[in-house]
Image (cartoon, rainbow, N blue to C red):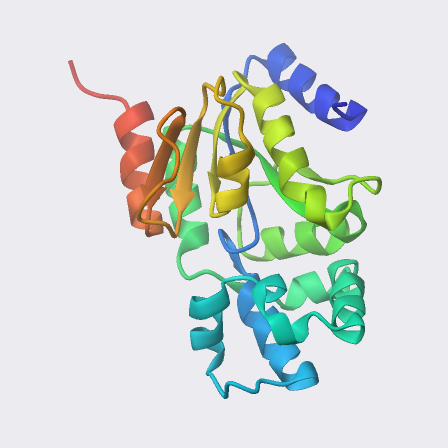
Length: 224
């Protein structure tokens, strides 16, 4: 079931005659993994003695690190996800804000779609404003959706929002995997160089320059 907030967001876009892209936040705009992996290895150990960047390259997400799946570590992660102030400490993915502003000149950024819980909206908004991202609504994961089901919820919302939301910039393979085969929007698959789907429009974009290039290719104005 699509939440009232999402329905109202879509209706507002319809009434204003707007369409555009939404953006994921974690690992797309914010280097959230850098903070998470640093804190997890400090608090719960790093028996492989890998550097943070190498841990991220090997596991990508903290939930994939087997020795961090203890009750204590899982509890810390759950609490951290709900920590509003923590969101303001996260690092910016270099130049993501500048590239987003350039993309916003090609096609409007109409919002943000994230599996962060609604409890951290304030900190997330502050972080986006601090880094000069477009001031647009944030659609965050509702309280009744557990974190492990977040990407299923996100794919459903993205499907519902089309055609007012014509696509998303997102790094998550899980979102791509869970989108239905009748999804007609475009996923700019950030920080990925290949795609596992051929039945929907997914464009791997290793860098933000690649995202900008492909957005401009699809939506840029051409001289006649």
